[in-house]
Image 1: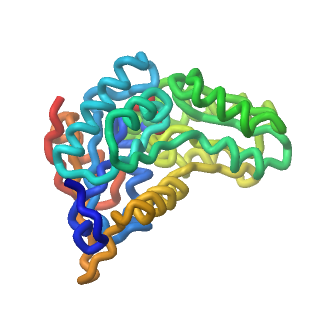
Image 2: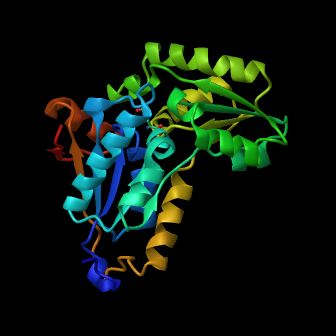
Length: 273
Ligand code: DGL
């Protein structure tokens, strides 16, 4: 049974998952927003990228990852993946009676921020082709022009830890150039892997382009959901929460890439295939 009092909730983790290491960009915001909350992160790197996979495959993986996190005691889930949210959040919400926070490309804030009236969205093809994204455009994209770009191959660069190399820059240039040519002055990072390329994206897009990602908003949303469910770990002793990392990539690469992206050396446990 789930704990319901804040003090009892301290050591009960929130589970966070992604197709791979991208969701670490969201996890960093959650760690900052909820310093006393224990967190457990599952990187499904063996099956990344999700962007080109079928909805049935992504739903199946999302269920397996959620089952794993719940088996480790998770009291709430964050789907730190735009592609998995679009494909599977409905099914997850039907299955599990715990708070589940998902994410979607930040079209609404981008539409409010643009001065040129053109917004560029970088995301996976899975996200861009989803019914959820179509609904997002219908609700918030009507007053502006939304140019979309599926970034095939980019997730793989980040999964390899290639954040700065010539090949990564070349791919980004190819994907960003048409958006800038179309007049976009606001770029939405609609995939949780892409914030790790922010320095390169800023360099390519130049200082006049606003770049928006949703990691901080998702962390705020999680905090509200935990508060509403009386599940917030407020840490009577002020003890910092533990962060546990699980991945099904091969052990050496999981350890080095997750440590690189997390900014310090961490232990990575073996997630079931
Ligand atoms: N990080 C993911 C997202 O936010 C998925 C990328 C992928 O595996 O294709 O969409």
